[in-house]
Image (tube, rainbow, N blue to C red):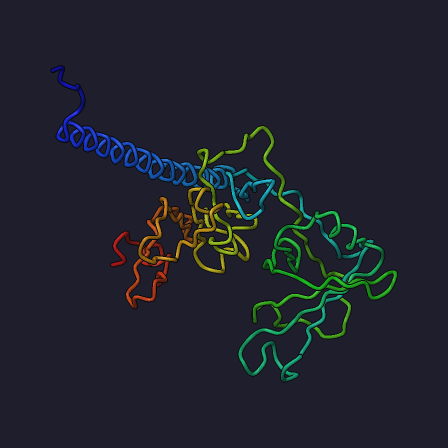
Length: 321
């Protein structure tokens, strides 16, 4: 009688075991590549950011960078472009075509340069003539954030808001100064020598190609610092300039784009939720130093929400110590 050929149970189990092992190895290899890809993105980001700082130190002038956005989703950054400031716009001065008047608004207590809460009060600047500030604003020629300096060349830069046309020949803006800047300002008087500078937009540096992150790696601007969405400019001394420099460290949240597109919340640490690799790039505003830190998904209170994703970056340590 002819014996039927076939696989024994042992042979089938061996084959299944081999397939399982191969599957695990392939999965691990792909996960490892994902992690390496994000780490490579972190190194690219650090190189681009420190490159902008080096350019400012070398040129002894303001230089910076801007996150290059995904044209289909402005909350995703794909890389960086280098920036050079455009020449400033000056108003006022003796015999100026557009004279200005600086007015301190004592909105709180009516005396001194600061109110009872110790905070400086609003300064209003009047522009006379036809400076066309609304056209300049509508064309996006002002810097982001909008900056003014009084007096020209020697004053401190301040973030201004509330452009208003009072009449066909008068415009006003307001800003919150430091106490030192408002001491000595004369209320309701016109100084024919008063001057101010507006900082105009930053343009992409000519002949400097964009620096792209590796394919599949993005900057999640929804998770990054608010200041990461605007222009980051370095002073000639290598420090972060203007408003971003006064708001503390700047954090860029790097992620695998698939996690973003799948709507995965990096703070969700519920058992079974798998996240691809993530990384935080932190910039110190005082030194301009740039470092990479892992995301802290520790959940001490066991509520399935990470306590502070930026904990390691804030502590300046990969262990939170």
